[in-house]
Each structure stands twice: as structure tokens, then as C-alpha cells.
Image (tube, rainbow, N blue to C red; front, side, top):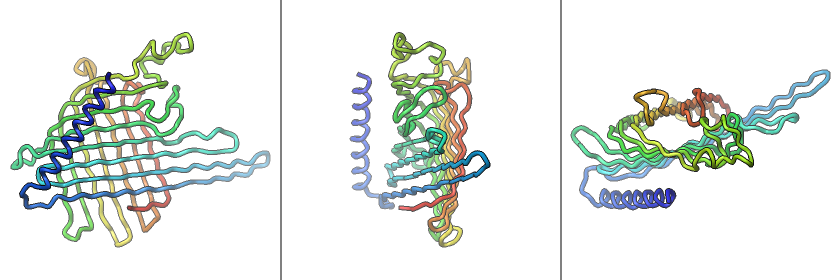
Amino acid sequence: MKKIKLLLIVTAFLGSFYIMIAQDETSESNTKPTWSFSASPSFGMTFQNISKVDEEVEELVWMLNLRARLGYEGDFMQFASFLYMQYGQHHSKTEIPYRVQDNMILSVIPSIILFPTLGIRLFLETTVETSVGKGTDPSTETSFMDPMFVYQTLFLGKKYVSNSESGSSQFYLTFGVGYALQQTFTKNYILEQNRQFPIDENNPLSNYQDDITIESGYSGIFEMGYETHIFEDLLFNASFRNVALTKKSVVEDIKNSRVGSLLFTNLQYKVFNIDYTMRILYDRNFSLRRQLDQTLVFGLRFNI
């Protein structure tokens, strides 16, 4: 029943989205509606061979990144969507390959203008966060969409985009506050609060947690980015996104909240590329401690 309700909400949302775009394209305005799309996959790896008297060590670490954006700009209706994926593995002769990074974030964010003179817009954001491959994190199995965190937030905010006259640089900023519905989907993944229970064939996971954990609370969104061509073939871009979500009883304990941040910087010369990524997550459903991942990758990048 819950899945049917979610499907109906998504269907209604997509129908409303296309109706608003049609109205925007047929309305009289000074700005012609435009679509934009970009995708930047990159790949990097490190190979290490150490020869000793009694052993020889060979190790290989590879990392794959993908960043993609789809946007629609109109006077009344605007739409933004981005996909971030990062996956990497460590290989050696003496160990089973294991993940060193695994993140996937997909966001869909339509908005409409409410107060044109103030530039205030009404945003409806849906974001999905999950892992791509199988692994252990930190003491329970994970796989694609297990666990998966989803939130829908309706918030008031502002969106600002500035392009240089030459077209070589762009700066964007989005921020706002609102209210969010949050869902944590699980199958075999054990939530932090249930890890103290003995879970085996006689005590299955279904005795301790539901497949869907639903929570709600206030939301705060902040996102900014900058991209510039330093030279013709030298490109620099950086982006930062932070989402703060409160949960039940947050007034009694500030720890009843979720904070996720993603910082990405990139320096690219032709196809040669340097990426730095920092991912911070705090959510007591997954861990009682802050989770911090940092990667620095030298590799190849292609822009579409």
C-alpha cells in the first residue's frame, strides 16, 4: 500500500510538471525557455608493485566518477536535476576486492516563482541516496538500493545564476527552508538502532524493523557552484551542497537530525583531470558517528 501511494504521488508530480512546462512555453515572456544538459565521466587508477626478499605485493585501486546535470529555465517554471555517482575498488593478490568508495545521489528539483519582485520561488525536491555495489558498511551488508534514503521537501527559497559576459564563467546559488518527508528503505541492511539484537534464522530482521522507515521534519537546503575556463583548455569548477533535515524529538535532542554535505572540485586540462571529493554524512539510522569520505583522483575526464 505504501509503495502504491508513493507511485501515485510521483505520477501526479510528473503530470503537473509537464503541464507547467507547457504553460511556460506558451506564455508571453521576455525570456525564451531553454534546456541544458551536461555530463562528465572520469576514470582514474593507481598500480603499486613492491618487491621484497620474501614476498611481492601488487595492488590496484581504481575510481570511477560521473556527474550529470539537466536543467530547464523559464520565467515561471524552472527545473534542475543532477546525478552524482562514485565507485572505486581495491584489488590485490592476497585479498578479496573491496570497495573504497560507493555513493550515488539523484535529485529532481522543479520550482515555480511565487513573488517575482522578491525573487522567491517554491521548490519541490526529491532526492535519492544509495550505494551501487555490494559491501560491508560498517558491520552489515549493503547493496544497490539497500539501504536507500529518499526525501521529498517542499521549501521556499531563492535561486541565483550569473554568467560572465564572455560566457567563460558561471556562478549559481540556491538556498531555502521548508518541510520534508523522509523514507529509509531497507531489505537486509540493519539499522543502527537494531544492531544490538541477535539476528539469525530464528530471529529474522523483520522482527526488528520495517522495510520502510518514515520520518518527517524541517529542512534546510544550501547549494552553490562555480565554473570557469582559466584558459581555453584549462577548466576549473567547484560545487558544494548541504542538506539538513530534522526528525522527531529534535527539540529534546539535536542528534535527531540528518546532515549531508558534498564538496566537489575539479581541475581539467583537455582530457587530463584532477578530482577532489569530500562527502560528510550524519544520520543515526546508519551510524552513531559522523561518516567522512575523501578522495583525490588523477585520471581522464570527458565532457558531454
